[in-house]
Image (tube, rainbow, N blue to C red; front, top):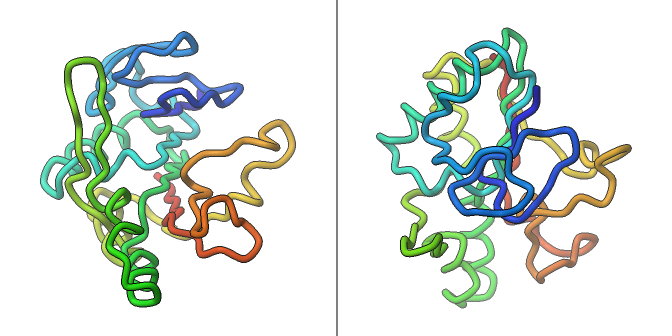
Length: 181
């Protein structure tokens, strides 16, 4: 089993889709903090792109522990989240706060509720959090290598660049990190 958590409108073939917002492709409409519908140690891959920042630094520990329990031994947690180091470098280069406000303080309406980004990570800070949960082999992943074959052409915030969509010359603003249970 492969999970796509907080998928929103994006669909990944071969994955079980879970999101709080209602989309026709979802397998479950549910908050991704807890996954009672998924058996423990039954998942080979969890993919979550640009959703981790919606949980604060305390809350994220329980969320990641929950996801950890759902993964099989050797299972992969693959995350994408705004990269604080890249955002700071972008700001230092252009001195335009508007370029980084979205990734820092993202706002997403879901029905009558609005959720906001509560935190941001760089590689070291997220690696430390993941290792404190029990994950190992924490490393960066490259979307160009992951989204090949059956997933070729898939596009989401793991490929967030400035300038927008300039994937050849732009600056990648997404911290793409994976870890093993």
